[in-house]
Length: 393
Image (cartoon, rainbow, N blue to C red; front, side, top):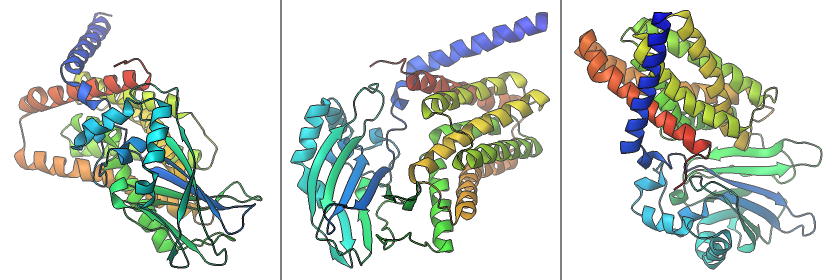
């Protein structure tokens, strides 16, 4: 009983230390997830056969501030961050007005090609998302048309690399709930030539390449929460065997829920999953401090459970642009391999470094393991509070 009480006290002390770190240095992490791929969805007009209807969901403040996000993960890393924040402070109506005023500049960076010919674009409605917490990036829905369209020829869509990654999706047909075409495009990359009358058969190698890439970039550089969780696993022990056990359990678990969610068998709202992922980061770091490298059944259950949770987070990325039915398995496996490559790119160099330096157990624990775990837990707690809307600035 005494041991349990001491452990209980230790955990509370650790949480207090984490919150102290938060107060002194955590505020700069409040917008870590703001840069996300934009979504461009299109379909041929039913009333005007020579017109392509397009809806673009994007963070308009990025464009309006003339920010180049091709290589960024956080708007605070740009020299235009102050301008970006100025646009964020506008009301929804004011922001929509700014988008309309800047439409010609945005249209110049959007390319809709039909049979090799670039089509002119005409602006329709502009709707800015409302009702969000101030810490969240709001989306702006921009509707526009491209004409004159030759429906017998394919269309190619892309935009300037400075605007970052883009998901291009063809709207569902009348007979199917699956998009006829969906793809994740890296900054500056072009879509395939897309048929307007039938599903596009993307080459297997292209499927593998694109989904490998999207899985990798979801970890590096865009998956800071998953990176911190993997670092929390790495810090647990200097033993290579223990590291392999943990990474294997985490991989197996998130593969299961990623597959189940992608198949539509398991669906949980991101409003529930995202705060829990943040809390899992804090918990695994706290547990690393007090477990002292002892790989027990409790650690197995912990890593497996949190792996299942993170798989739901990975699935939310795939949900944006979907998995093709015809090549579902190769796409899913490629995305998962990309995720694993991203994780290995984090832990493998660190493990080789420690293997080379061979720090003493005492030095590792007090100079590396405990301070780093407290920092990771602090960030996890901060993100938990932020994603629950508890932080007001």
